[in-house]
Image (cartoon, rainbow, N blue to C red; front, side, top):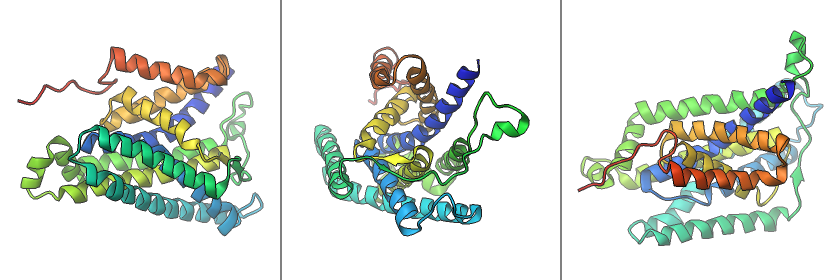
Length: 308
């Protein structure tokens, strides 16, 4: 039972990171019906930028005072989100907007091409080897303070929840309640009619990429502080899990993306512990195929009638 609970905690932490990345996939697909395959690589760049800032620019170590670590981590999150948001908007402007009215295959190929471009930029700059940082977060079992020593709840796992949960809630509130969120939903439903009603469609789509890129950057910071390692092709693995999460929950459905990510986080964790880590990616692909075959609309997706 202790192993099951421990595995569940690990799966929950992984699922929350997947959720931040999955929201970017769902946001972009929901508004322009494009799978942004470069999104996972924007997340990878976020982890690289965070590593550079933490270990290079600010020089954070385990000996740094807790208050300074909190201030620096907050600054790193904001800076990384700003940089990755800018990267994502640039990708939309250069690679996707000129092909918006082209056949669907053209922007799809462009997205795959942008993914390779970002991967190779990271490969040229950072090299092929894993890049790691020292664990700057306290290595303590928080459950030991209440007398539980057989299950570990680390400060890093709590940090994942503290950062991701407010972002997920804030994102849901923003889309549902704000004027810009209503413009995003209107554009997703019918961009032509939204344009006639005064919505700046190009600006709204660019803003969607801005938010998606910012979330990917935040996920990159959380990932590097949680796992302490990044690599140039990290975006493929996390992108696979995040995309599968979005499909599992219902592509284009934001609560569905979060639910799918939490479910997939548990699948990953239990597969790593009770099957084999080498089989985890294969199991993720099998889950993706199974969802597409038996429930193509996902767990929370709805079957829409064809437009006349």
